Image (cartoon, rainbow, N blue to C red):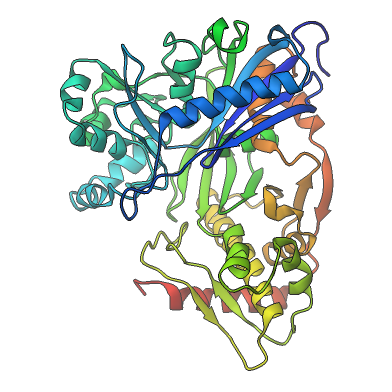
Length: 501
């Protein structure tokens, strides 16, 4: 598949919420070297989450250097760089010095909840949803930018003078990699800011005015595979073009080759993010899902419906760390398999509220159906099934919004998908096939493919899609009446959880 020669490798930067990684792929999209480094989390107040942007830069640069060295390559052997990043996390820096004026405010941060509430009360959410596909929530970047400008001495005046730049993490890293020559992002990251009109594919002045963000701060928006600039040779030992950028969940969608409408991927980590490709038109959700850009190639956006589950793998961590019911996450599947089938124990893991389609921040966890015989096995099954039921909630909402009758095949990745029991139960409760690929590093793979395709090293979407390789398909085997009985029990448990019920 790949090109041979001096520049026959791609470097993927995967800058996440708790660590930075760099992965070198060869011309056949095989991983040849990796490096990873964690960095500190900062919690200055309840509900606040920050990163030091210098930690993001430092760990990114060091892992890039380490991965290239471990691959045994000269820097000139890297044809291009692809970047994927934690989305919505907000950095504001001085254009002259390149120094951040404040810590990065992380996507998980809730400090602007009151601001979002005021905007909703003033009747602005419908306009924001129509233009951006998003809800008015502290999750997104726009209100974070305004908070920095309002709370850092002199920042708003400096921004009005055009002296400050904003970026999601991809943009900040790009600025640093290019020595301040490139201030750009891609359409997927732009679509998570509350400032980007996903229909017109441009920053919207009316949204910037509403959120009190000067347009001069915003980066140029490019395709996900584009010429974003070239690295300063002093950093990595060569001038390497940056040819790909995508937010992490969109990069995983690309890495799973979900290029056709109706294709769906779900990433199961601490939480879960599911994206359904809806093709060339944005579908405005009536079920409180997000409408977002899956990717943009050759100036043409592909749209997706997105649903977020706050607690997925974290439910298994809860069994292990708080309850002490298991010693290792890998024990959960076999333990769940031994549970009494006559017991219907449900766990609604609303430890930090409920995500889509409920968006109930005040909901809290509930366990129902306990009997005297309920034990470790029933708790393990309830925890794993909670992820499956929440995925079904998302899929049902997506089907209602999109209106497509065709069968959905779910492509999965993330740490939880190693559990055969969980994936089989997912297929059973969704009544849909679940496909687990051979390559689970789909986020980095998506970033690498975007850059490599632009560099001419990798094929286009159709041919790349043919390289997607199945490890195992899990097909539904549960009887329909059993599936629906169990799902009704889940819905009853959720109703008991909701703060607004």
